[in-house]
Image (tube, rainbow, N blue to C red):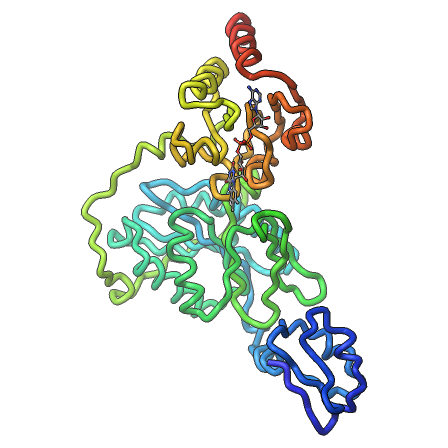
Length: 395
Ligand SMILES: Cc1cc2nc3c(=O)[nH]c(=O)nc-3n(C[C@H](O)[C@H](O)[C@H](O)COP(=O)(O)OP(=O)(O)OC[C@H]3O[C@@H](n4cnc5c(N)ncnc54)[C@H](O)[C@@H]3O)c2cc1C
């Protein structure tokens, strides 16, 4: 809240001139704050008589920031496997921990996690908090949330990172809420601010049109989720050493209203476009479900997986697990072949980290060519069959 001290205010108007939102006005020699105030603090900075105070900011800064230390990564373990994003986050977390001069810890929750815990050290963790129990074999929001919240309250890490996977998105916001912490979802970049060691959390905003960097200067822990395939894992180093701390979950943490009767791997899990080395992506330029078959044929000829733009998924030509982009998956294959995809910013946000991008489009001005390494301008119904013939002829 912005407070005007009427005894100190001299009605000079500096605050009014400075406010970019027209939210402060001098009336009868006194600054008056309106509803448009965003609490940006620019008026406080220019006030020469210190008549303006941002009350909440001053209060929250009183939180003892120094008692929170260390970078944590929640390492997702499901159906007996570690989610690859966990290793990517350990790679990112290692850099943050080194920049802060603190330890990098992994939190591993599940059942039969011993071998995985050892692996996490080779991928960069200094400490692994392993919470292993048959009762944790299946994910539930309540139990996983209670266990992670409790660990954070005990050890007080300054940063907690998790994958923006179905599981991460499901329970991490609840953990942040229980701790009274903020949470920045879907970060694409993380860094440490030199001045005060705060975490700089960058993510797309306003439909992907701008990148916003979010900072939590006055509360801890700083919590972020990161999409798979955005960060890079470290090379496994068997010589790395670290400590595995086994944590016994309290019975009340395991109590949950949810009873998992059966866990079935969905067919969709067979289609992991995030792990494919080569992706052939099709867009609305394929015209119909039948036209989209051409993409499947090209993918087959190249031993590639099939991906699609949202326009294609919305049209029902292929399922959502194949969608690339801001509201789909982020991919970074060695080769991405975009066919009949215009290159809308929301699509590009999900594939621009691909090593090599080839685009086929009949519109030479299509924005996809701005990110493509190789472009073919022409009708895909002519080009793709030629490509298939050529590739198969070379086998
Ligand atoms: C909040 C939000 C989130 C979104 N999230 C996503 C997302 O995750 N993923 C995503 O993909 N989109 C997303 N979108 C939608 C996005 O803005 C675009 O509408 C979408 O990507 C367009 O798909 P497209 O490129 O297949 O279709 P179009 O934009 O219609 O492009 C079709 C292209 O095909 C070319 N073409 C047509 N015929 C031929 C031919 N015979 N030969 C060669 N080229 C041809 C055309 O020149 C054109 O460039 C999102 C939008 C919003 C607002």
